[in-house]
Image (cartoon, rainbow, N blue to C red; front, top):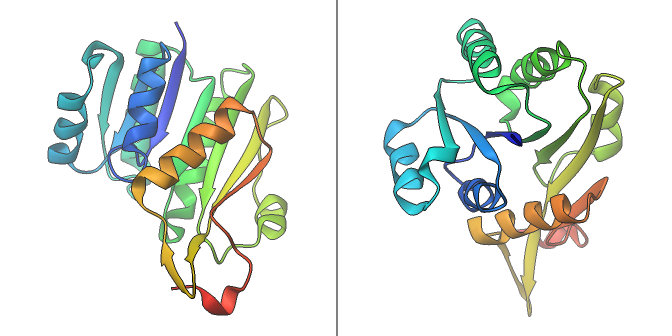
Length: 182
């Protein structure tokens, strides 16, 4: 059974969650909001492949407990897609540490906001030897003389493209002309 873990999979990564289920993955979805999780479940023809993990990832002890139970039941994910807010950086460490316990090869796609430095991020994140870090950075869209932030659909499409092509680094939208950001 292919198992993926998606953190933030009911918001801007909802389409990514659904796509992974379409690809035959059992998808464990870390979500804080049951209502949003229920909306994603209703949209999928593969509800038996979507596994809600309802927990606030800022609650470290509860996150460890829920991930541990999930991995015992469904196996360690070989694919992780995570959008984790900067005020919960410990959640990244917890997720990587819990996956690393199984010593199986895995790919982790971490989504970064537009103001992050990919180089600095790579230096400070500790990915186990049997894991491969992929970074997807979110930018913005230029439309003529105006700019706007990415839509959820554009974000999900960019993440899906990065997964399909196994890109080590992928920028969704643009980061150039930073002074023109929305």
